[in-house]
Image (spheres, rainbow, N blue to C red):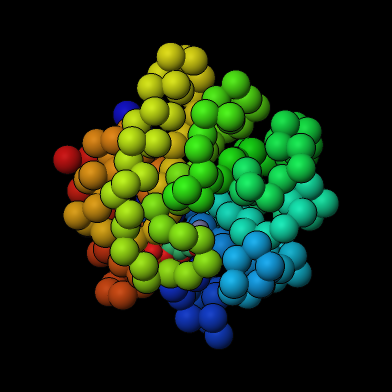
Length: 216
Ligand code: DX5
Ligand code: ZN
C-alpha cells in the first residue's frame, strides 16, 4: 500500500512560507490549514494566501478547510489549482453537491470529520470523495496529543473503503509522530498529516523518519 506524508505548514514559520515549503519538498503534499475563527476558535489565512502558496510550492497543496459555509468558499480554493480540498462534514450544507463541484474544477474532494463525529451517516456517500480526513485531535490548533479513541472509526472507514473497491485515501491529522503514525497505519490510514513533529527538527529528516515508521 502506498503511503503519503503531508507536513502541515501550521507549524512552519509564518513569515517565511516560501522557504518553509522548500524545506518540505521531499514530502508528498503540503497540508494547508485554513481556519476562520468561526468553525474553529483560531484564525490562519484565506484565499489570497493560498493562491500565492500554490504559486511558490514545490509540491502540491492539500487544503484543509476548517471554516463555516464551505459550500460557498471551497470552490475558490479548488480554483487555485490545489491538488485536494477537504471540507468538514459538520459544516457543509450539501456535501455531495460540494464534492461534485470540487471534482468538476479538478481537485480531489475530501471530507473531514472531527473526533466526535459519527461517520455512519457518510458511508453511503463515500464514493463522492477521493479522501476522508479523520481528525485525531479537536481541530483548531497544532501541537495537541493524538486521540487514540478515534481509531475504531478509522478502522470502520478502512473496511468500508476496502469493501467498496474504491481508491479513497484515508488521512489522519493531529498529533502524528513516529510513534502514533504506526497506530494510525495499523488502523488503516495511508495519508499522514504532521505539523509539529516535522518542523520541530530538520524537516527532511523528520519526513524520512515518519515515512519509514508508516511503512514498518
Ligand atoms: C489542527 C490541524 C492540523 C495541525 C496538526 O486543527 O488540522 O493539520 O496542523 O498539527 P500537529 O501535527 O502539530 O498536531
Ligand atoms: Zn489539518
